[in-house]
Length: 280
Length: 211
Picture 1: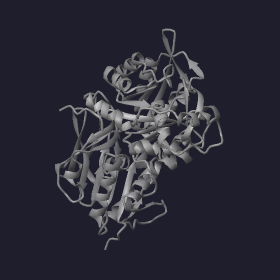
Picture 2: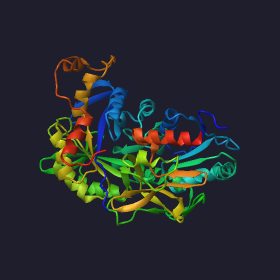
Picture 3: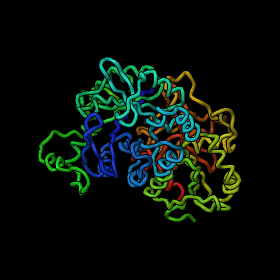
Picture 4: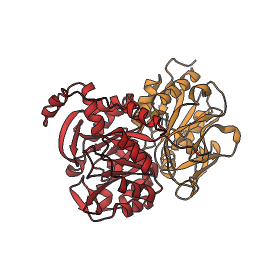
């Protein structure tokens, strides 16, 4: 008997000071609302996991992320992964203590892969995910740390194998070129990485339609799909207006007036089920 | 006499997601408290040992605060109940092959083993169903057979006594034990605190069975 797991549909929330922010190609960030409100909505709507990414954490060192994780973990009873600014075992522990189930590391291990091994030894493989930000330059792929700001001339596929050997429990592959554009995933690199490793791989970056999500599940070997813009821009309509005075919120006033088709998470799952994809 | 809100003590293995454990038990009707290493003996209706992390590290913390002795003493009291979650369940076993050989609490006979090459995925991460082998008040078979629970682990338990096995699940084509129960000890490989509404119902059932 082969029991296939339901594909995990995972909202990815870029956060800064508790606010949900979103950009394009990881740049040009704007505030969308309170991250907690979005997370609550997605949990109720059947999210299989929630992933928090603190975009600026690796620029400014350790963040006050744990406070927001704590607030989120209060109401959400599905796994919560947290990325951003994890550079020491103390940082990792703080995230777990606050309620993170998995920590996601990128920058710190690009610099020093033994940091991954230390985390695996202390917290166990299964709770450590590695984020690989793949950037396509011409025909070549390289990886990035610090959210696209620093490029490292390393092939993402061989890097994936390396982090697998070092004990990572899961790989999240973000296609920086496709991120935020809502024009579909980079099937090529996602397929290569998901075939090269025997770890669960999550595809992220580019989800724009139900068909895009179906395609990446059908055409690659991923265990889950990370979705951001597509869900957030829809969710805005159901959530209270953001009260923050920090950052540019003009966009929000405009978007609330644009009528859109419903893109609820439960609708995505229904679409996939109708196409014989197993979902929870 | 049990109180309406059973008091539970949560063991802090220093690498746990204590906050979500705490909250999930709270909304399921328990009165949770994190156990302080200073407590000499456990006075709870239920002691929960949640686990995220590595076996050896977990055992290290248990030894450091004499939780092994405290658990043994607690289990000899009337109306005591121990619940191990994920690594917390694995620690109840005799030994583990994680990072070499480590001894466990030896409350359940059997070993903790690593998913081997027969599984193309070394980590069982995600949602899976649980077939409950035995019908008990605590584990309401009907209620859960169709639902998914959340798993995340690279090691699994292999009990020596079949009678301790209460639930099984699959990782790809590999069958493993996902619920154990022996006297006043229960363990689940899945995380009820991460299994959405299904997990909360599971904890509510556990609460009702204690009352």
